Amino acid sequence: MTGRRYLATLAGLAAVYFVAGRLGLALAFVNRSATAVWAPTGIALAAFLVLGYRFWPGILAGAFFVNLATSGGIAISAGIAIGNTLEGLIGAYVANRFAGGRRAFERPQDVFKFAFFAGVLSTLVSATFGSTSLVAGGRASWAEYRPIWLTWWLGDMVGDFVIAPFLLLWAEGQRPRWNGRRVAEAALLVTSLLAVGGAVFGGRAPGGGSYLCIPILIWAAFRFGPRETAAASLLLSAIAIWGTLRGFGPFAVNSPNESLLRLQAYMGVVTVMVIAIAVVVRRQRTADQINAQLLAELRAQR
Image 1 (cartoon, rainbow, N blue to C red):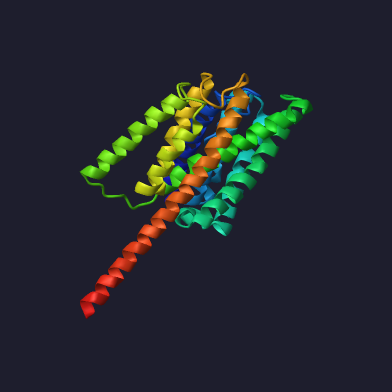
Image 2: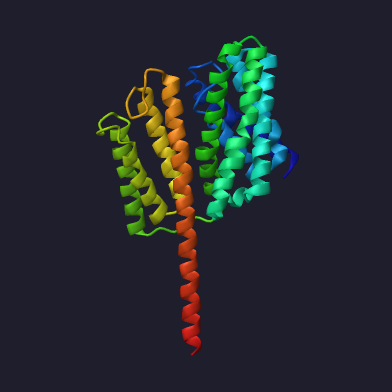
């Protein structure tokens, strides 16, 4: 990669991070700099896994400027940006070391390792750096430290659970070849997800009905694959956030931040589970195809 292309990639990465960060901070309730919806964590993790560690300046710049536009303090923004960057670097390192890196979604056990090491553990870094920077800079009190830290950690963690798999799986070079029947089934799946998700998070499902969304995601896992399942989970997450913030759905309570925390915990667990199911189904389907091919070859040799 030439120097000019490298700089252009850095600038693009910083811009994407900044825009996603602004959208996430629009949903900050416990503190202006802490939100339960933080897609940039998943963007940073996917960028480091796909592009490499040397693109850290793009993440650092995006994180710094999005927080500077929010908090207005250079020192606070720098502390938060350092934490966000280290989080992504550590997450990518442990994913590469323990979960197969970009290939984490080829084996079900690696899906859970990815979720634990990259999603649960690395995000502790950003939550600690960020919360401490806010308190040290006078933008929050020590009494607020715990709720800010929890919101920060969960928002970053679910960003790794929902956003990173979607980006990593769709960054794969191989594209599926669908016939007309496959396209029709995909359209039916999306329509069903929109209808059921709209009903559940629009307050029209009986008894909350969060369980009603799970069969559709399992449908995606069994009939399509990890890539499409990750996309379906992301779509459902967007619908759920929209409805929950309007006070609808099974996770809506009086506090908007608590509502989002409950929702994000649900979406994080469900997303990891259905992607793991999709990986199991794909591996079984691949094994069946190999066995069928070997059987055909043996019969041809007789």
